[in-house]
Image 1 (cartoon, rainbow, N blue to C red):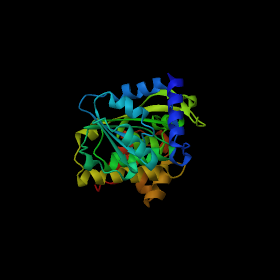
Image 2 (image 1 turned 45 degrees about the horizontal axis):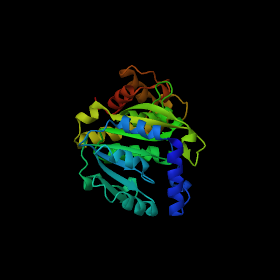
Image 3 (image 1 turned 90 degrees about the horizontal axis):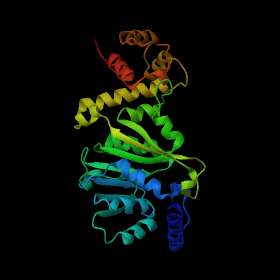
Length: 287
C-alpha cells in the first residue's frame, strides 16, 4: 500500500538524518503497485543478473531480491551505500556498490551480452548519457526498464514525423515501449512532472552482432555522425543540414539522397531508422 511504503521511506530518511538530494535526482517511489509493475516488466528468470541504478533506500532492491535473481545495485550516495550494505547484509544474492553508474565497469561483474538486465529510477539529466553508455560501451543487456520523465519517454518512443535525436539514438539499439504512466504523487518528494515506466528490448540486429568489430564500430560512428548533422538545424531541410554538418556540397548530397529515393527537402524529424541507415550507406559508399 502506498501509505505504508511512504511512512517506511520517510522513517528511513529520518533515521539516517538526510533530506532527498535534488542534485542526485532523489525522488523516492512510494507506490507499491508501481514497484510490482517494474518487476513484472523485467520478466525475471531464476538465473538473471539485474543491475540496478541508484537503489536509494533499497525498496525496489528488496522486491528484486525476492525473485532469487542476482542483484548488483550501484549507488552514488555514500551514506545510502553504507545503509544498503547493512540492510542487505544477509541477502547473498545482493551486491551493493558505491559509485557512479557512468563509470561502472560491467566486465568486473561477469556481465556479458544478453546475460543481464538493467533497471532504475533515473533523473532526466542521466537518461541520454546512460542509454548511450550502456549501448555503446557495455555488453548489450537483454532488457532495460527505466522510470523516467513522462515527456522524455514519449520522445523516445516517437515515430515520424516527430522523431528527435534522442528517439533515433535509443531506437537504433532497441525497441522502446511505455509500460505505464506514473503520477508525480507516487513519489516523495513529489517532482514537478509525471513519469513513465519505459522498457527497452535490444533490437534483434544488435543481439545477432554481439561482437563489436572495427567495421561495426565504424558503421555506428558514421550513422550517428550523419544523424547529428541531420538534426543540427531544427526544422531545416535535410540537404542543408547534411551539407553544412558534413562539409559536403549540396549537389553531392542531393545526388546521394536520390540514389536511395529520399527527398532532400524532407526534415530529419520525418525519417525512419531504416532511412537514416540508407543515407549512411549512400553517403559513405565510394562507388
